[in-house]
Structures are given as structure tokens and as C-alpha cells.
Length: 119
Image 1 (cartoon, rainbow, N blue to C red):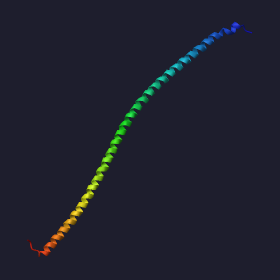
Image 2 (tube, one colour; image 1 turned 180 degrees about the vertical axis):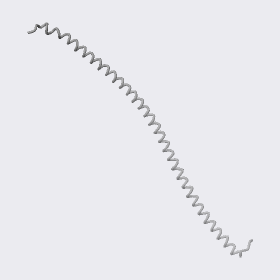
Image 3 (cartoon, one colour; image 1 turned 90 degrees about the horizontal axis):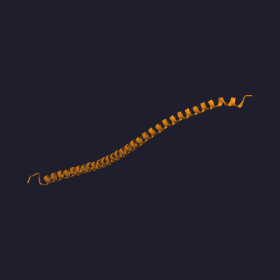
Image 4 (tube, rainbow, N blue to C red; image 1 turned 90 degrees about the vertical axis):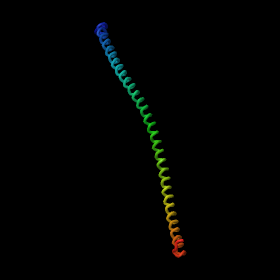
């Protein structure tokens, strides 16, 4: 049987070594934590910048869509008005042709009834 002092003597050196290893592992863990915190901060900044950029793009897009819709409305109104003008022109041309034909017939009748003599 060994004396109690002989058994305990190598233990303090081993205990110190274990504590040193634990301290090294803690330091490595602290370094990793700092790296991840830095990465987290970088990503949060990137997300903030992208969020701001997305908001600007959405605003621009909304303005452009509103402008496009206004163009569409203006084009549709203009086309409708143009079609009404064409329709009115066709109606006017038809009336004009009919009236010209009537005048031609009336003039021919007047010439026949007057015996073809000019007054």
C-alpha cells in the first residue's frame, strides 16, 4: 500500500495540466464566439442594406407600374376616341354621298323638267 502523500503528489501536476487545457479550450471557444459574432454583425448589416435596397426597388417599381397603368388608360381612351372619330367620319361620308346622290338626281330631274334648257 502506498502512502497517501505518494499518491497525491503526481495529482497536482495533472490537475494543473487539466486546468490549462480547459483554459485553452475556453480561449478557443471565445475566439470562435467572437468570429461568429463578427459574422452575425456583418450579415445583419448586409440584411439591413438589402432591405433598404429592396424598399427602394419596390418604390420605384410601384411608381413605374402606376405610370404604365396611366399610359394604358390614356392609350385606351385615345383609341376609343379615335374609333368614334372614324365611325363619325364614315357616317358623315355616307350621309354626304347619299345627299350628293339626291342632289344629282334632283338636278337631273330639274334639267329634264325644264327641257334641258339652261336658265
